[in-house]
Length: 350
Image (cartoon, rainbow, N blue to C red; front, side):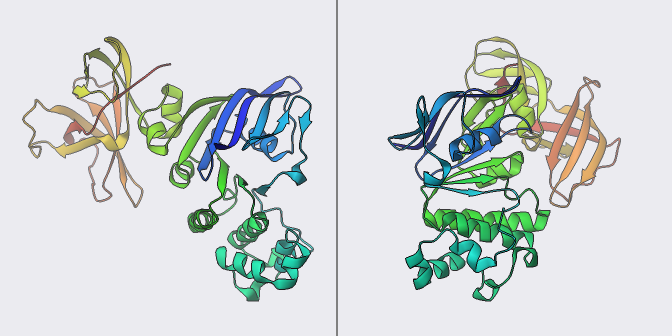
């Protein structure tokens, strides 16, 4: 049974279509990322599930109970859903203790056991209970917000870009802590984000949205390595696009004869490769028995954890390639290299 099922959701704000018939399933215990550019409808979908917005059409069910539908509307406060906003949305006039205890029953407040459990869960010290939100770092504020969201043991937690306001170093650590806490609670989670790396690393399922519609749903590996179309391929990460010809289970293109990741009809197609699939060697260093594909380095950009090399093919100077390689690779402009492809190529539509 799915923890949450949204079916046929449509929503307009004036003349602007926010959702155009969206179907989303959140299996019990899963962590799903809603990924898409600003304005694609992901936050509207989240707010409808939370009960903050009413759809024009469609239904939302939690388990076997319909909470939104024709003639049915369960208010947000009666839904067993935890919600963490981008800025945490803590009560500024309440200290950490009272922010968390706001979501606890009177008996739980008296015993203090659930509060202690929550502090341990989100790695907060009891010495921080008397601090006010403005006295906390951004990461600490988000941990307090998560503790409050989990206080009533909800069946579903909604995260609305909760890490977007944090700096890069703090974002990664907070994200890992939040993921660990949610896993301990075994709670179904829906994360809204426009950050591709965040979606791919945080979730076990990714729903890609564009213009109020679901473009693709799958595991992080599936949506990244087998994008549904050219737009999805480019949005999910750097992509190398080539024209090619399919014959059977192979495709012939400027980089040679490559295996296909999935069968498709013979004919002219667009093929997508990821930059990390391209392997380069200085001229003369390659041990491949095949005729080499020769290219010239245009630029090398260093990112610390890796390097990105821009190439121009000798056989087709108009075709530019992007290669992601080890950080210690330092090839100056004009260096001649050979190019090989690791793994299978993916054919995409428009």
